[in-house]
Length: 209
Length: 209
DNA sequence: TGGACAATCAATCACTTGATTGAGACGCCG
DNA sequence: CGGCGTCTCAATCAAGTGATTGATTGTCCA
Image (tube, rainbow over all chains, first blue to last red; front, side, top):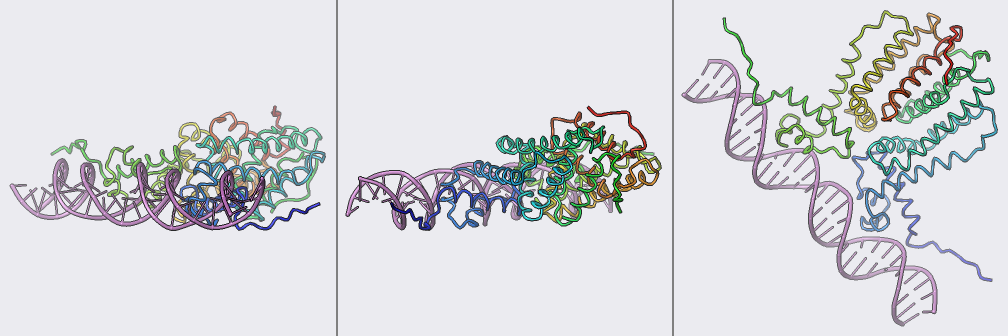
């Protein structure tokens, strides 16, 4: 038998190049926003010629779609890291908060880029087609958690699960857009969210400051 | 005595022109985002030459600051329409929600433009200097309401007022960024916010769907 | 009436920016 | 070796793009 040895190529494969381009573009979007995003800057950051960039990603429109796809993929991956479906609602909620906190601390560029792209999705159908399902599935997941918590009696019985899910998502999404005061503020807010969801029967002896 | 008759000028005054320019720019930011904002488009929408635009607003940077200032002014005006300081917390909160709802319905461009500019504020100190105090004062106002509600016993005693204010602002700000599902969703969310704040002693016979 | 100032515009500049072209370099397979 | 497909780049294009210039028009007041 023969063993295939892959010697590192002087030239990168298309997949690797496309990923490098997407990550460079993401970083530049975080730094300068869409209005400051230039194909030349992306090429320079990757270390390739502008024509090479256009070889791998034909147009700027396709480039932005690629960025949206890699962001979508990163979020989906993070979503699948820990199993949670079988746990009680309050624990699923805390896992969700922990995941969000970890992403916010370890990969702030991801959430900032996501914010920028969600804003763009409002007027760019191509981006919306990629990211709206991602956001919708997040809302759905939160709605499931709240519904389960209401059903098992740990959450308030008068909760509107979908509204509560939108409140949670809005509060967290709001933190994405502000850098600096994290993660202290993050913990205060998730704790307040928990208190606002829990059933008053469970007397929390954990008064806020 | 002589009567001063102001005959409509063929030429507009600088203040009027600057306002018209700011409003046109705001509309174009809503339509195309910052990355699609062109000085020529603004001039065309106002009906003036590009050089005239530069006469009134010297640079694009100054133009964006001007847009931020008019947005700030619009929000401050709306903030001062109804007196509210002396009312009970729950009513002040409802007035706040009503105001937000009205703005969302009557002037969606204002909130969309505000969202775009808040995003830009993250990387543009000039915009941040104008809009961050506005946002901070909104958070402060919400914090005051929650603190008052906790003090008079209508809100939960374990509330963290600042965290709750951030949750409210986040939930409303999230609605700004999504057009289409308003104002139905808005009402569901504000009602859920109310329930999450109110003291469980006040038994609300208003179960959510 | 005439000078000072405010407001406007056609024409243009200097530079940016997304995209293309044509040629070459590299690895693989026969 | 030789051809073929993949990948890369220097050079360039065409359409913008913010800003400027020099001149013109209207308003107001002495």
